[in-house]
Image (cartoon, rainbow, N blue to C red; front, top):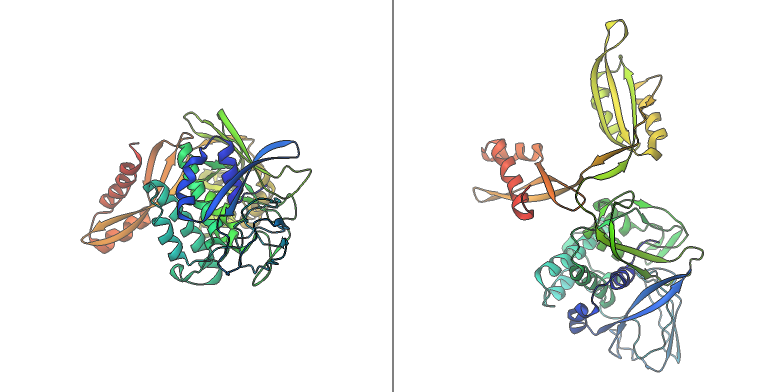
Length: 448
């Protein structure tokens, strides 16, 4: 059912992370984490609320802690929302929240959503850097905020340094993001993967208007992330920018659950009642062993003898839009000894009909065969950017890193075009640039 900041916190705690590691956040901000339990559609799950420990928010309003607080949370809150607070004996807050969340509170502290200062991207970075976090945790938290900032910059057409966070810069969002980094660091996973993330459906009200779900910020983050999205299963906003950014930084995408010897599991609940769907986020913790990942595929093929080289050369790009994962062409001898080509296309099974139609339209072939393959074994591939210093100048090279399901690197391959460009500019040999870039990655991540 998607993901949000507080659902991720609750899930990690339920899986065994130590809540004591959250102290740097509560020491730096006037907030506390209220950890509870709930049952949704028969699933026992953990809940997390971020609460203010101060009686006055940034608007100067005082809160009578004897009040009962009832939240009508119809939307997550990572957006540019306006808030109305009625400060009488019974508070009725109608917020656009980040937490897929509508818990009722009757306690000493008020929920942090919608309260606390809104900060610029640079102010958030300065605050995180003052928390005294371990270097690895600080790097991860800052990287998540950078991903959020880049998404906001992409949506609004602004520079990253000029972005002013609204809800994402408030205390509760910072508590979600830094808290997630602390809890993940405590669990010490070698690798994190996620199956396709549910976005929900319908639309969400934001300061600038009514936007379809997934919201623009989530779309921007998903374009930068390794995982994929899927719509539904309900017309609610299920995937928030904060949740998407946390997973965008940490998680690789997989289509199905990989082989895993389970050690523990956890459930974190959102607050919407989405029966018959249990509104929870689940994490599975275990040993994935070593090896490659099994991926279900279909292999389509056709023989052609009258397709121009330009069309054949463009098939990789033109068929990718239809869902092709890989396209190869092999010279063959056809009937009457005519030269031709065998075109083979790899795609997901559910995309085979769309890819076959595109292949027929692009090449004019009269028939496309299903080769009958059911799966392949693949490495998890991810591109990393490394910086090389040559004659006092910095140059960036994209490097493809292949890992097995245990996260162990076994192949590193620098992009030839990047190396060739640098070689032209510096006079270095292309092979030398390639070796330097690849050794940088293997030196950082272990031998291969």
